[in-house]
Length: 462
Image (cartoon, rainbow, N blue to C red; front, side):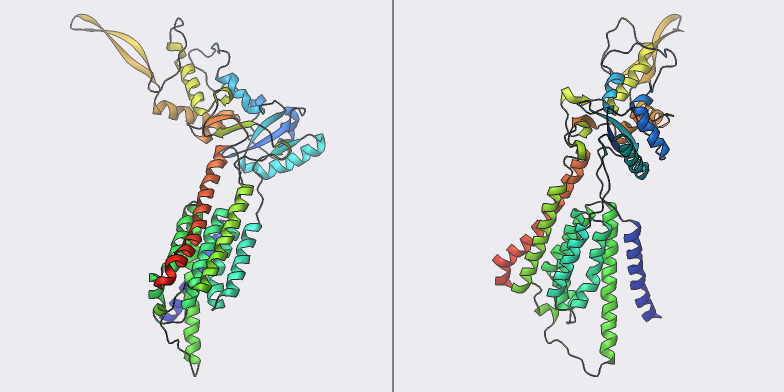
């Protein structure tokens, strides 16, 4: 029974790992806006034609210029005089590029496939220039390079099966998560496994591995860097580690069973503690892994979406979330919408003689009252409205309940504090790419640091 459990548990972990890699696979895609794709169509194509083709192909919830309405109205004074250049006028800038050459439409992510089909049909019908951001393309180069590294290190390994089988799950991780920031830590895991296989079959192998810094450093660093890629990558990396350990367990049991049946068994004289995983030959493996991580870094720099590409209109300056905006190019954000909503709701309580003032967080609208107390008339006031968290939450809820595709829904999905300007860059992608760049640089420093330590100090102390 115990032997059966020792066999079934590793097999179960391996199966769970493979299922997880298949179910939670990802394809890299970069979008300007969270939850929406931007469809840009030449202004010569009527908006009605674009919306008709989108509807024919099943696209719903498309945010366009003609569908916008006044999202908030006071029940007391439903008609108000809007000041020129206010929010309602400024938000119209979201529906064209800065040069006015393209109409912009915002399509929910759920209709990506339908949008691509509609775009193809529209392009054939009109011949006009158009494009959509965030088209997902599977980067076969990432798993292909990792597989090539796996093959190369496998040919260098002393115990080829012991290295190839457990490390194969690392290659499958890059197949499931084909990102450069995932592939670089996977290369470090391959390095750790390559160094570890040198101790296979020797006494005190696991104790020696637990104390070997040249194995522990790349292994721990790889797990930390994979976890920094997000919850999905973190969970799958732990599943891959569990599957690799399970594969080692199965290989060990197979090795023991093979020795038990053999009439003569060779036993290594030196224990694992007396064998160095890092030596002059192994240091070359470290440089090979460093070179592959450098390749990942260079490829990433060549494809990173610090400036999202728009194919036929790469020079387009589009409404985009930015880290800091220029006053002359600033577009209204969701916080501006909340300010406008506060001005609309509080308008009936303001004096027409007062000059307009900017809305401020914590501002209150009070109503004066009078009451008789102790034989005297006493004045007091009650708070009718307050610009606070409750008001902001009510505004967000009202936007989610709008019955038409409002631009405010897109703004709400980005968050309250996102700044927006006309730009050829998007900080949403830049922030993600900035993190990936840091992870790649950190991954490159690990093998280079290991080699430097071995070259200057390790050879003297080992």
